[in-house]
Length: 204
Ligand code: ADP
Image (cartoon, rainbow, N blue to C red):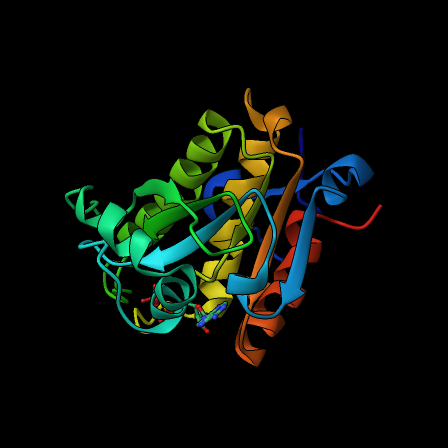
C-alpha cells in the first residue's frame, strides 16, 4: 500500500510511482538486507550474477563467480544459448555455497535513453525473483547488476532495484521469498543503498 508523498519530500523515482512513498512495514523491512562483501561467499538459496548476453563469463563479479563455481558452470552456461538484456536464466551452483545461480543480463547504461536502461534493469530484478520462486529459492542475494563495467550509476541503480523488489514482495508471489540480500562490493554501492533504503523501506 502506498501513501501520497508529503509536499516537499523527496520524490520516489521508478515503478512505485513518482509521488508516492511506501508505507513503513516492519515485516517487509525484515525481509531485505544490505551486506558488504563478496557474493561468491554467500550461502543464500540463489545468488544473482551480473552476466552478459553470452552467459559465458566475463570480468567483474561474473568472472569471480565462474572462477569460484568451477568449470561445470561454464559447461552448463554453454547449453543456454545466451540471454537477452533485461532478463535472466538459472543454473546450478557447482562449488559455490548457494543452491542456484541466476544470471541476469543488465543494460549497458545509456544516459540519453535513461528510462530504457531503467526498464531493462528492473526487468533483471523481476525475472530473477520469478526464477527464484519457480525454483523454490526462498533467499536470494543480488549483486549490483550493471553498476560496474556497464556504467550504471549506483545512485540510480539502487532505487530501481529497491522499488522492483518492494513491488515484487508485495505482489502475488511475494510471500514465496523470505529474504532479499543486496550484496554491495564497493564504497559507492554501500552509499547508494544507505541513501535509498530508507526511502523504499522506511523505518517503522
Ligand atoms: P556489470 O558488467 O553488470 O556492470 P560488474 O561485474 O562489472 O557487472 O559489476 C557489477 C557489480 O558487482 C559492481 O558493483 C562491482 O563492484 C560488483 N562486484 C565485482 N566483483 C564482485 C564480487 N566478487 N562480489 C560482489 N560484487 C562484486
